[in-house]
Length: 111
Image 1 (cartoon, rainbow, N blue to C red):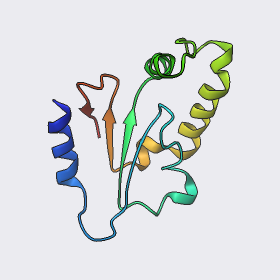
Image 2: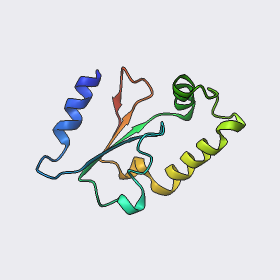
Image 3: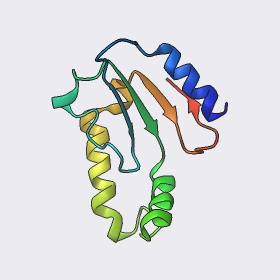
């Protein structure tokens, strides 16, 4: 499925209307709080971009020059914060739609 096809499918299932709030988040560091408890009721529709730590670490390495290995001690704080967030805020369960975004040119709708 292409990105455009995926976006059309997601958009077709999203509620439309004036003032509808949509939250989009990925585990790559963007929007880390969309699914936090205090925001749980804010979104009419939400998308979680699911990406393994191994992939996000490589993306961060390209973007920021950080080590590409999520097991490196210098990434421990980031990885542990993300694990805590995934465990306590359950974005996969709270999202209206979950997208496997490990391959950004071939996203896959998984839930």
